[in-house]
Length: 173
Length: 173
Image 1 (cartoon, rainbow over the protein chains, first blue to last red):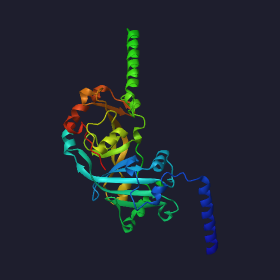
Image 2: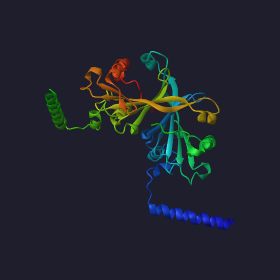
Image 3: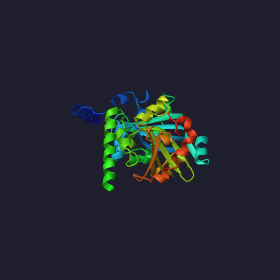
């Protein structure tokens, strides 16, 4: 039975391979996917905005969620699950009060982005990351990838939003 | 009188057309500048991120500041004053607590972007807006421009940051 299962799996992989050759790869970020987790995705700071958020507590940050072209198109079209090649970036900065802005507004009300904390990415590759909902999770501190052990909890935390393909952020028009 | 007014307007448009041909337009967003204040700058939601902020008080919003290519390049290069054609967009959304995120984080700490409030733009045109530091200020509510009277206070509020060419927001890496 196991052998048959392996043969079926191999045949399916072959069919998948042929299919993808036949279709000709059109993914814009294949190079990024190859180096995912080892280097910051090139050009991520130029990606388009998905939304923003503020986390209190230990994080105490203000954050922006950006996406590569595949991710942004999926958000705008409401495509679920996200297509392979989609990458979502979460940038965060220390949450700081702005005295300068407060003076202009006439009251203590303004909070802005201070120094960066870290950058996290989710990459969709339904085969490579099949065991974690098709998403690979990485984090960079000061431009360097953090060790895998620190990422072991990422997927479990995202399970409550399985209905949105494990993505918390909603697109802000 | 009406006919004369139309003829004057037509002549001015013609002169404007000749002038822009003579100068040889090199600005990437001339079309946007021409319609500035009457229609939302086309494609502004695709512009790159400059920074994020949160305003408490009456505003009670979370916001993203985006820039067109000229503005983003100037921010990154530290160019002051901003070159003509630079446009800075301030998008804002109602500041809402996210129960979904709070459950994932295990505490009431997460705030996200709700429905949009309004969108504001600053366009640099050192000649056209010479009396307000070279910046034109506009605001759109539900995609429609607000009346000029509501914009009369914009420039005065920005004067305290004259040293940064009247721009509050700093670029967040």
